[in-house]
Length: 150
Image (cartoon, rainbow, N blue to C red; front, side, top):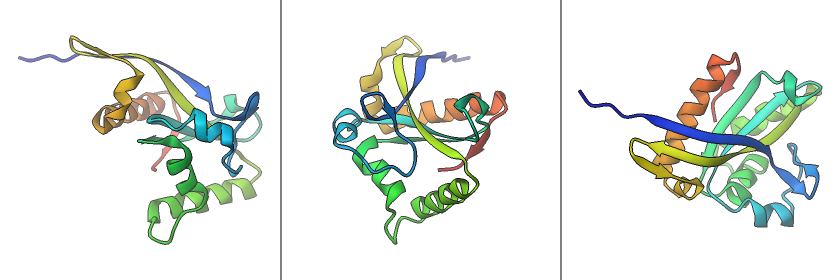
């Protein structure tokens, strides 16, 4: 019998519009964001009423380049981007309900995949990102979150 153990050390961190100003949908992409978040990433949109701690609905996804490519697609979906159009419409409905939509990025400290130790640079591989997204979805479901599909 084969066995593969996977371990992930991470921390969710707020995405910032600029120094000390957290990004929330639908703010425009800032020059600060274009520089800081032009990276492969695991990200999470959290939808909440008053404070992030009351959030129970999340969207978890991955991107080869979080900003500006992926984020721009959610803000300004083209006619061919059906999934992005759906997300944009759902987010706009949340805004009508006076909900906040906050963006977080998963700061990976270490990934152990069997005997192999990887770091955040491993996120350039789409299969590594997808593995982590799957794990994050399962973990959030176990904690009682409603997971929306990206």
